[in-house]
Length: 191
Image (cartoon, rainbow, N blue to C red; front, side, top):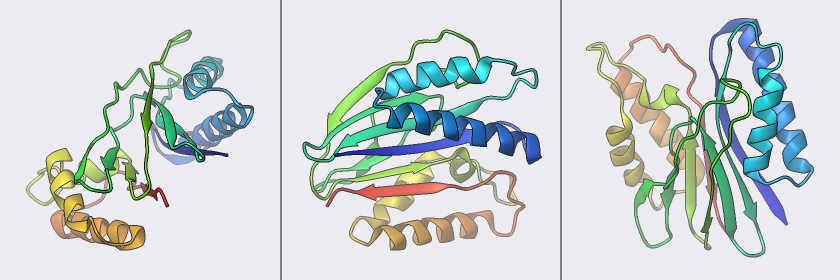
């Protein structure tokens, strides 16, 4: 009756960053599957990632647990980009969330957990900073305001069409400029 929704982004590049992300993913999954609240998951994972973190790596992440039978969505943000939420009868807007500190940044942190109710037809969109920090040849950022404008053009389409459309919008904006960061997007619609 529970669905975990998580997105994360690791600092750094290459094999060390990839390995650190694998560890973070495994820890988040293990704690969440054990039934811990999102807040408790991030507090435990943060402390475990801080152990022997000589490279000073960190992870930004957003974790939400959807109780399918009720629509209760409990979530926590560890320094990640704010998700966008579209209610069935409205437009996309930023999900109210206070971004806590990143995971693996400092031991013994406390994270704030929030709750909302999701209803049939509501859509949640999560992304990494590679989306909003994509640049064009003039060194302009794609930006959060541009993302909000673009995503609201895709209100009444399938999730696949929305994600493909947004990626096309980002590519058109970049106009051939080099991509410096990964672009990851995740969309969930309540049916």
